[in-house]
Image (tube, rainbow, N blue to C red; front, side, top):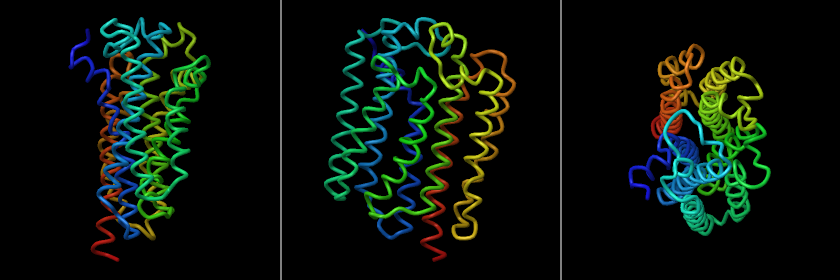
Amino acid sequence: MATIGEWIEGARLRTLPMAVAPVAIGAGAAFEQGAFSWLRTGLALLVALFLQIGVNYSNDYSDGIRGTDDVRVGPQRLTASGAAPAKTVRNAALLNYALAGLAGLALVLLSGAWVFLIIGLAAVIAAWGYTGGKNPYGYRGLGEVFVFIFFGLVAVLGTQYTQSLQLSLVAFIGACSTGLLATALLMANNIRDIPTDQEVGKRTLAVRLGDGHARTSYVLMVALAILLPITLVGSYPWVLLSLLVIPMCIQPCWTVLRSESPVQLIPVLRQTGLINLAFGLLFGGGLVIQTLFFN
């Protein structure tokens, strides 16, 4: 029987900044449009958090029953280690998806943005299909596409739209940036797992690119994400507060480029998550500051 600590570890808290950052950007964009709502922001945050935790548990379950995690670097998985029965881990994933759905339904009822019922359902299906089902797309190198779309574009623009019923360029740029940072986190995770993934036939994008090119792609994703807000300097100069995260990027980028052991990449996951969180808060906060004091 898994302990509470093991369940918390299984939720992979280091990935949760991927859920918080896009909501912060979307809420900031809604504030800039004069339509900010604490309640709707809170519901959007619950959707993102429960979806992320659900993804983590479903990956634990699906990879565990396939034997993908029998040999791995990093924290143990609940299913593969035998700490929890596979069905229990699966049910934990489904519970979190259900909670995300309830929060999303409340958000849709408040906003009247009915299209997000379909988008939300697509998000859950995509979350499960990453490593679940007969032909998981995460095993074919498409996991980064899911992360960029749903933890970048959908999360930011959905947060904004369910408050203002509008979309904006600044929100789109922020969505691309946070989506790239979330994708970089996944890339770092998959670089670490290249040797074991190759053994079990898991063809992640990192495996397809090869070790050297995958490492370079991580740095390029981070760099592009951080530099994209410069395109907004004419209209939204205060989003350049997000550039303050540049010093935070040096260590993980250096580690990814120079590390010789997969174990050395483990801290990069937490560091990349924190970069994304700081970026999202600074970008969204910059929109709030500009709206309050300079518009």
